[in-house]
Amino acid sequence: MTNQQLKLRSMIVTALFAAIIGVLAQITIPLPHVPITGQTLAIGLAATILGSRYGTLSVLLYLLIGSAGVPVFAEFTGGISKLIGPTGGFLVGFIPATFIIGLYMEKLGFSFKNAMIANTIGMIITLAFGTTWLKISADYTWVQALAFGFTPFLFVGLIKAALASWVGIIIRKRLVSAKLLFSVQTNVKQETL
Image (cartoon, rainbow, N blue to C red; front, side):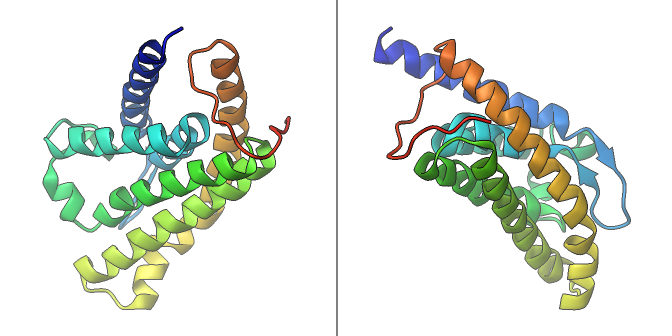
C-alpha cells in the first residue's frame, strides 16, 4: 500500500471521527449550567485510536463544522456563538486535550494503562479550559465556576476516561492490524491490554 493510500485512509478515518464526536455529543444529561455529554468520551476515543495528529484534526474538523452552523454540538446546536458562549471553553479545551492524550501514548505506548493516564490528563485539561472560560464569560467567582464547571464532572469524567481507554485500545489494535490506520512507531514496546 502506498503512502498516499495510507494518508487517504487516515483522512477518511479522521472525518469519520469528527462525525462520531457529533453523534456522541447528542447524548446529554442536562445540568443547570453545563450538561454532561458524550463529547468527551468521543474526544478520548479519537485521541486513543488516532493519536495526536489525526485525533486533533478530527476535533478541529468537528469544531469547524459546528462553528459553521451545522448542529453537531450538544443538544443539536451549532454556530460560532457556542464557542464564545459559557460552554465554549470546554469545546476549545478539546483541542489541547486530544493532542496531549495522543502524544502521551505515542511516546509511552498504546496500552490501557497509558491510555487511562492520558485520558485522565485530557479530562482535567478540558475541565480546566471550560471552568476558566465559564468563570470569565458568566462572571462567576472561582468557587462558582468550580462548582458548576469542574466538580460535577470528575466522577463521570473518570468513567468516560476508562471507557475511552478500554474501547479505544481495542479498536486501535484492530484498525492497525487491518492496515486501516498508521501504526505510530514509538521508542517503547507496544503493551497489551
